[in-house]
Length: 493
Image 1 (cartoon, helix red, strand yellow):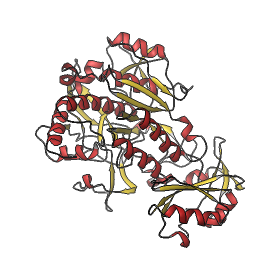
Image 2 (cartoon, one colour):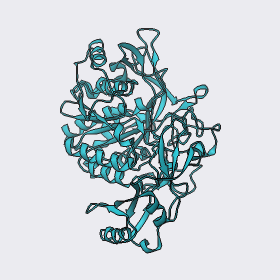
Image 3 (cartoon, one colour):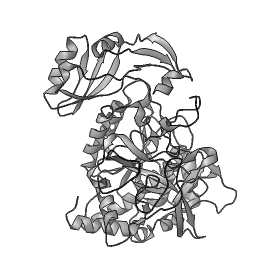
């Protein structure tokens, strides 16, 4: 955040008439105390019964005076004007006991799509085919048993759009049924290939699933990005209960926010998971340097650039890292190592959270650079190297997918198949998958993961067992589904 403000022009005290600050609350009665305190200072509060968070709003000058910090307007290097405080506010003495945490005062979310770009194919056989993808991650036994996603829904939160002609050409040339995604909000106008890849990768694995594109671009227009994202999660949960979610976009790294900022997202995600939703988020493609700024942020990479994507660090999100995959000529799995491309400063991201404590299901893990017992990411991985990626169609051309933005929809679609297998055998949808994944890894009847022990990124190396580059490893899907059914039959949640 300091680097962003240093590279931006300080326009002086903000003239904004509506500055927002998210706070977390101690209990249900805390909102009343907060509202009374804010009203006495010319501010107002938005809160809902039952939420553990609220939003304090007011004119910039009033917010600055109430919290004792400056609030200025800035012009970013690319011209965007936003308000921010260069100082993190602390809880006023009058609110101690009612308010447990404060977010950032900032209206700019440095978002990005987690994609390294796509490669044109030099030969027709390049790139994993749908069958090759199923074979590589041992999902073919599920597909052969008739588990193809029929009746299931996969939701993609997207910043860019897709052309139907590309989806039709992919289906026709892959021997799959044609499909048209549902769209929530307007289809985004930008076309970068990200959404095209996500949809086609998922369709390759679960060709009968219903696919939904949610335009998430409005969440980063103006302030309140995480409140908007939380509301969007709530809406999707109402309209598509029990769907599997795939996120391949970032709303900024942890250094830009506090845990209080993310409270609306965390609460909405928990509510969706109680209805059977599993959520996957790409860990990022900056090789562990998720806090490195955009194209015009000065300075080479350094220690301050090490960090996690804020949303992907949520303990309830399954964070998905990336690998380089080696297969036989028919797509059969041979080997994998952690994906990194040093000349392009790309690779799988992961690391140690600065915002969240180590969840119970990660307590047994030992990681050398985590001395404070914090959340570790990623949780799992799948192929992300664009040189060993999945064939899809963009701009009516065959291209090769890549990035952890490819890995996340792979896991989302494989989870749809596993959900169907579980339900057909007397089990239930998975919901919050993380506790079960780590339980399987701790000891199960069948090897549910392929341990990735080689490679690394700019910060961490892959290693035996869990590591900060590839998590628990990549899925041996049929084995994993059987292990999860064992846990459900044993009453493990």
